Length: 122
Image (cartoon, rainbow, N blue to C red; front, side):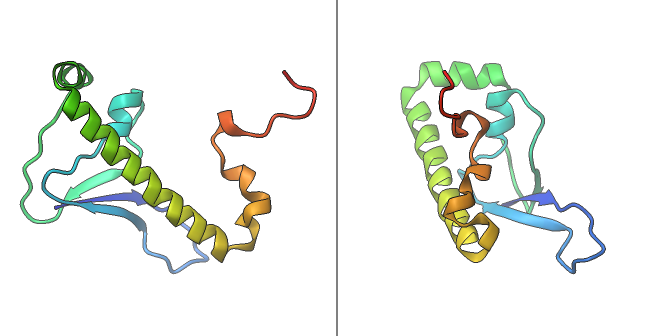
């Protein structure tokens, strides 16, 4: 298994753990795809839990694999979609728990390209 986590910003006012665990992945799962697909630095860290064997892919190797095996591409998209669905459910639960994130104030959580456009704007 591989544990995916992010370091929490240090704060003297909280007793929260120094890391936020995002997921624990198992045989056949993948991670690092966001960095690979977007060409940006990694957004989280990974740590093996016990023994783990991983396959490292470069962006070029991924492109070749996607071109040669459309079934692989579909499976990748299916799993990414499942992750988005799970994250949406977690976001809704967090919004329900925090007044400042309730539906009327949710636009702050949208991606920049999905922000509301002011009236009269193109």
